[in-house]
Image 1 (cartoon, rainbow, N blue to C red):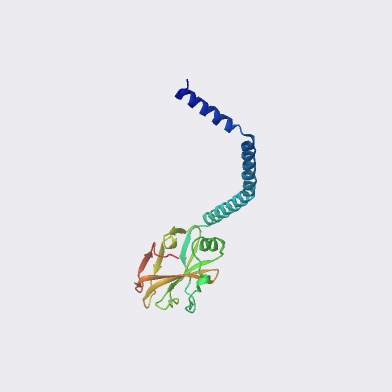
Image 2 (cartoon, rainbow, N blue to C red):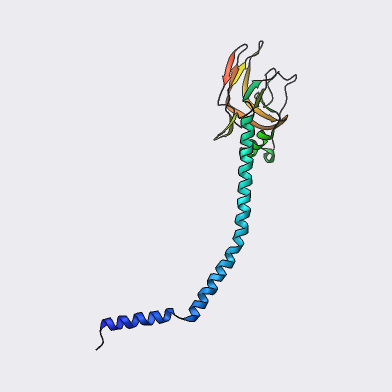
Length: 197
């Protein structure tokens, strides 16, 4: 007499026999070999990406160490004999983010000039020389983290409409303020958290 248990047992035995199919094992082994062969190409790519990552980390650590090794300075220089005129920077020449930080860390001289409404240096204003670890990341780019003490000229005041960043004498970035601020003759001001490139 055949019961449901016997039928279930026979069905399990049939499934077990099907699982022992030799052709199935060969097909499985071939599939595993194909997958291993396909993955072997990734090993070289992984090594290459790991080297690139390690190189980038080493460059960042070196740049950070170089910046920290320099003393922090944000001090006025002598006024330029003639106010400099700055042309607009072409879109393909604009430096920002990591590229700007790299240029700053490799620079011998970094200078910030004060701009008039036309984007030119303000006659009689004293540009500021900066060095050391004085830049920090900001939503707008890189922000000068050291305050600048500004003393107004003795004769005529002026309005600051923006800032120009010069690296080794070359104009590389401009920051235009949304509103100008006035520097009165003989006044003392502190510019802080305002210079962003």
